[in-house]
Length: 496
Image 1 (cartoon, one colour):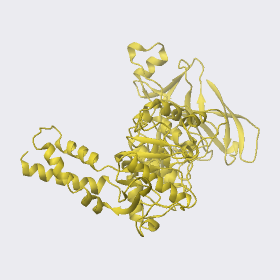
Image 2 (cartoon, helix red, strand yellow):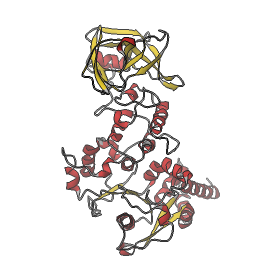
Image 3 (tube, one colour):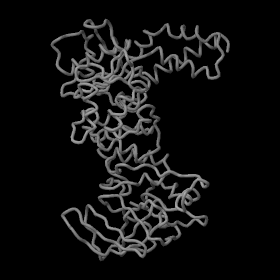
Image 4 (tube, one colour):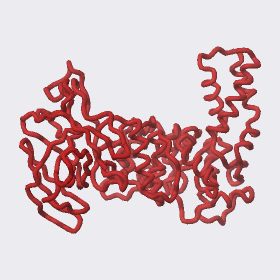
């Protein structure tokens, strides 16, 4: 590439990176130590501050030959335009965008806790990590602008990932030993591990540093500037959060392993109900419109987006309260079961038994399910069951016992009571095997039980009516047939 063309490319990549990959507003930090000051700036300020960077990068690459020159330039721009990003638990009184935008902030000793925390963050960003710029969610988003709030929430995972360092303040953890004690039964967990937004703040950054209550790093800086690859910290966090070490050390976002990722979010809370969905946008790498005021519909829309790109039956492996908008979808992440991991699929020549051989040979479940205007369209192995008994009734739950020729199943049914005499009951098996003729089957040879929905419809409805309702149950329904083989043509249902 000629010199002029390369210079133009560097300039274009530089401009595009600032416009698309850098937060809308940042804090510019000056001074250091007890003389640390900071002021709110925008992308134009950042662009002007780093105006020498394009020439520096041009000088580095002008004599080099690179296969992906644009990618290499972007990576170099990211290294040059470094900023620190903050992860913390909000306090009752935090400085807002409007507070910070009034004038440059100078170090003071008489600050309220929220201001003092922001001041310490800026000091650590500058003194410990050499960052002249920093970003904090409390004051770098103009929340009075719906457009800016929308862009910030959609971009936040990327902003954390692009940061030079993510500084985490664990306000209830004094040191590394205190972090280790939080994995013990009955021990109090630092509130940082219980909030929804801090899940992506834990996973997204390429580099992360944990500071304790008094702003001392849990691992000294002279040992490591980043804790991302430190097993001393990450093994403790693995036990606290149930997130595998491999994900803590290198997380790749995407619409995979849905039940497992939902489990990570299941014990976390957000003040705004919509945020339990919005804080997962980056983790699943989907785009969802931000609309505060919509309530739990936000999580339903998140599930809609995930299902457009996910084709495994285990997205339906949940129990408890259902969505208001479709009974086949869960109300919240906490509906997914603890401890689920994907069933390993062995190759045919390594299968140890007939069940593993079937899993290797045959397709499992329906991979073409979709949400439609009639409800969830999905193929199941539909097995009619007879209600045998109703026991242990309370005002909003009851124990139901069902029988089939090859199995019995007992479930705790929750929600509205169904009239047994006018209800048709069935179980819709989700993780059936599909044989060469396209029929579904289950068999007692498999060690793991099969998973099913409890389905119902009005007994007066036409037998041709394919619309069913998924009934809410306290636990995921598991079916373990006898040694017999149960197989039928698959039925396409619409679950509303």
